[in-house]
Image (cartoon, rainbow, N blue to C red; front, side):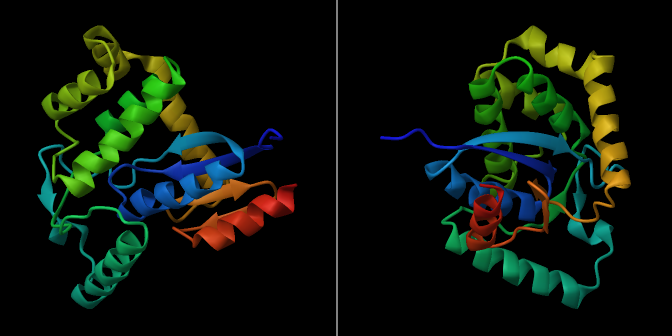
Length: 204
């Protein structure tokens, strides 16, 4: 069997973005054909939100727009066979993003266990991933050590990388999460798997 070709993808994403939850699952479809090397660029999409959590009404979407978004989200989740609770609260994602960013530099497998668990905890189980006690539990469950968890929240280098991603997003005029960059192509939003696959083939 010939080795899978390497495919480099950059993704701007946040763990409280429901379309990033879908987009992550859709990107995974490419792993069957490619050795994916993903540069995860984490963006805090609602820095104004409290870590204690707030009703989604605090996001100030018009009711009709929100209902339409949720209907679309439900259809996408069903297509990907992803469990999805009613999305009725939001939270601050900064602590989760710092934790994931730190995990990237510890171990790839550890990062992906945490990465998947954060999405699952928030969207499938309704856990508040803005709460550090909740995050500690999830991180330990996925194999991070207690000192690594605390270090992630106090490391200026980790925080600096998040700031770098924000600056990169501004420079690239990223306005949606997820946003993918595959080769010279840019894909905004949780695009269909077929669209991701076409972009991947174009690189080759």
